[in-house]
Image 1: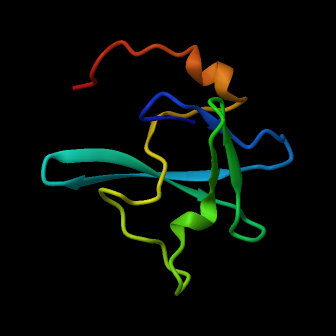
Image 2 (image 1 turned 135 degrees about the horizontal axis):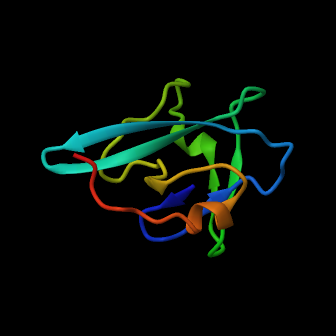
Length: 100
């Protein structure tokens, strides 16, 4: 999954199967896609970026075990491209332009 800012994240382990649900959310005219990363075993998943960052899916969870709100300053990754078989496959994709 590649995110706003150009970094691409993956689990780096084929055994770490991910479920990612992508939600659109707007605050006024500021719209983004937000990725909710789910692990079927324990709710926690570590993702690693190709620019040295890491992301722990537990940052999305509030103290009462609910998901934190989406919007400015929220802890969610904001994907611009998502796919299977790692970052090189996603990076090789091109966009033909907006879909009407």
